[in-house]
Amino acid sequence: MAFSAPAGRSELAEINITPLVDVMLVLLVIFMVTAPLLSQPINAMLPQRTDRQVEQQPPNDLVLKVGLAGTYTLDDRPVTLAALRGLLEDARVSDPKTVLQVEAVEGAEYRALVSALAQADASGIRNIVMRN
Figure 1 (tube, rainbow, N blue to C red):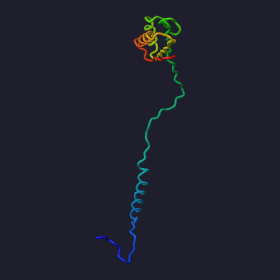
Figure 2 (cartoon, rainbow, N blue to C red):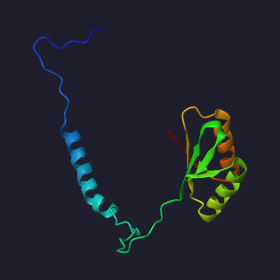
Figure 3 (cartoon, one colour):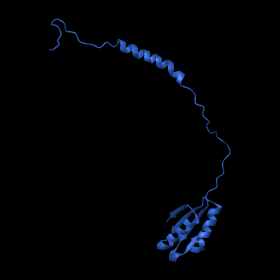
Figure 4 (cartoon, rainbow, N blue to C red):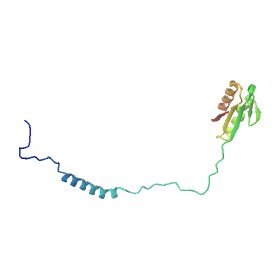
């Protein structure tokens, strides 16, 4: 059973968009009326600029050099491995942000470097930087 147009009528089926436009215009008016009512200012406490400058001290930098044959120098002063831990603990107590910069000369023993790092770790210094 097929549907077909009668022989004398050749009409095209078209969608009536008038109700669709009416609904869209009503929705547009509703949104235009309610949008200003929904926007409210936010009460926020923002940080204010201050003119005084906060004086920050740079962290205490120590340079530990591991030399040939297991020699150590801390800030260009010769030190033994046994005394190294005590000096590093004193530096950490005086400034908890102490930075230890460790550098080994070419040809230094790996064991000496690891021993120095172990003493630094045991002293409680957590900011350790390896340099060349």
